[in-house]
Image (cartoon, rainbow, N blue to C red; front, side, top):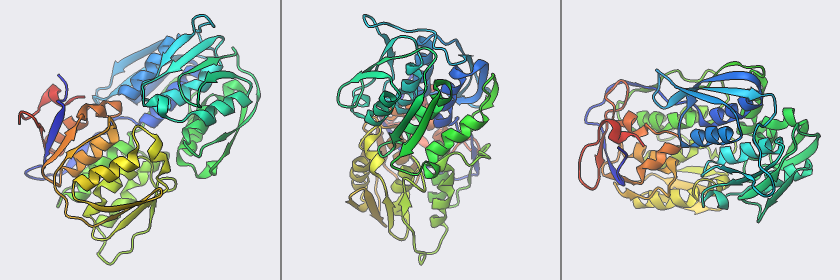
Length: 430
């Protein structure tokens, strides 16, 4: 079964304490898959996320000739133990000019960007393509850095599709990469830099202050390069929807099982934003920045901000415009559908306290929009979410966890909005 075209969110009739298990971090899983492919011997990634984005990465690595085993995780249905047999920097498969090896990345930004430098280490010709939206997303800064290192990439307009001509064993050299449009460009290069013999410098933002670049460097420092086990921690961005529910539902008590002990994920700071819901009306709110305060969970913060007693301002949102959808415009449009009062100025949104009502939300095939507004629907009756199946990108059992009875979930009712039928079991899995 699959989720219907539109789901309705019915707030829980009664509240009880919940401790929700969250799938593994997508950001860490896809970085770890690259590092495992470059390692020597077998690396077992435990607690790895199993969703569209990470399946795309696994299938791409298999196309490149890597042997990968996938086993169920008894503790979380959306996780797997993934065993990767690394080749010490060697890429087993390659194509040629007449028949490049095809690598398809869908709309998985981390897969596309992290794989491109890896392809440069191969001994042949590769063609990377993706979905229509991926072909619109920027790649030019990464292409430019790889060309500085001496690799040949043929692409039009700084976007996919691209043909890459690799050099077995890598090379040496230095490059400067801009992360004005995405920090993933620097992370992509750093993941393969040791095997490639590259020196990577970052421009456009202080790399030490770029949370996702810092995540990459910390992961590289501790990752087992000669095989072994690596534990992937739960995804803090995915946890934000449930933490938000705990803040906006009166008397709710929501905790996350096995909260990460590291400080790697920028969205681990989401709880600091939620303190606004416990503060008095007289509290002055400081601006929240997409660059310095939160990562993707800033979308969760924006969607629940109308429920606060004072206006909130969210800044440095430019990168949201270049992701799975034009997220700033989408957030603005869909919040207005719900009755929110907000203004957009440059790359900032200011959101005033608002009396919200239910609405039919267009998700633009964007998993985070679907999950943000579904979380809002736990407080605001009448929310209907179009194309809820897009959550498969990072959180395929999201609706199952919303609907699960406490303490494993929040006890919401999820309906087929067309028929009114209550969804249960496999019907809740994207």
